[in-house]
Amino acid sequence: MKTVCIYSYGGPEVLVYEDAPRPHPGAGEVLVRIHAAGINPVDWKIREGQLKAMLHHAFPLVLGWDLSGVVEALGPNLTRLKVGDEVFSRPDIARDGAYAEFIVVRESELALKPKSLDHIHAAALPLAGLTAWQTLFEAGGLAAGQRVLIHAAAGGVGHIAVQLAKWKGAQVIGTAAAKNHVFLRSLGVDQVIDYDTERFDEVVQPVDMVLDTIGGDTQERSWKVLKRGGILVSIASPPKAVVASADGVRSAFVFTQPNASQLAEIAKLADAGKVKVIVETILPLSDATRGQELSQRGHGKGKIVLRVV
Ligand SMILES: NC(=O)c1ccc[n+]([C@@H]2O[C@H](COP(=O)([O-])OP(=O)(O)OC[C@H]3O[C@@H](n4cnc5c(N)ncnc54)[C@H](OP(=O)(O)O)[C@@H]3O)[C@@H](O)[C@H]2O)c1
Image 1: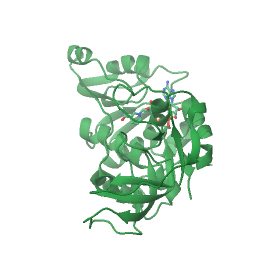
Image 2: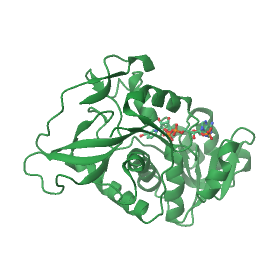
Image 3: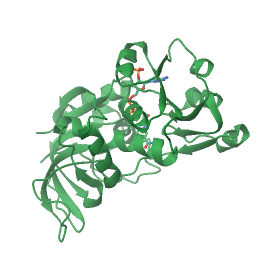
């Protein structure tokens, strides 16, 4: 099978498009024929070795942890899925990823793909969808009527988080470059802030939650806009708990985990038209290098996806 893998950490030049043996499913595992694989910033962060203290990968390592495809074979005694089912997943990031024609995934990490989405759009949804779900609802406890500030609202995670927050009945404030403001309003964002020309901490009325996708100065200034008892949830860098307690607010850092039942909920919302997935760029698997370079520029609208079949 074709794969895109790395034999060492480094820049885009370490990505290798090559043939590799097709993996076999063991106990509790499913072999999936991948139709499309989403690209996420974590792919190039792992390629660069930024997560090597936390994840002990062996080489060669197949990158990419977002996929949509079809069940090709099942490990022994599995009954929830059958050969031919269309599935999508954000598989375990500690194992080989989805820039490949086939992948072995634990059954517990797979859900049926939304029927209304093709594989390209379905492959763009699991990682961003689970991240939005786990930050807004699990860590943040976002409820109807609350106010949430979502940083980088036009990005892969941001544009899904905006829609999940609106579905929940929250008021949404989003930051983005001016070119994305019409897009954000079309998703239902109530207040759009141009991070290039406005300081969000000077114009945002107090919020119940901040979803921090940026870190650094953006995270530092985010404390100021929280109501007492509010929560700053970051996926960029762990917030300082001591700042939180001094300000009478709470904080959390989320590292997204695979979760088939949450994926099934997200699939229902996609099929009900409550969540739309925006794919800005589609590239062939052999062009993964270009996809990662685009992702690394950090100014995409929605998602980048590799077409495998
Ligand atoms: N901890 C976890 O489990 C987890 C999970 C998912 C993602 N992440 C991290 O979260 C970050 C975002 O991921 P993503 O997939 O959404 O990335 P992405 O698709 O590349 O989106 C990045 C977005 O950031 C916006 N942006 C850049 N600078 C900004 C600023 N100063 N203020 C506001 N927006 C800004 C860009 O929009 P403009 O064009 O408008 O500038 C772009 O839309 C990445 O660092 C990723 O690694 C972490």
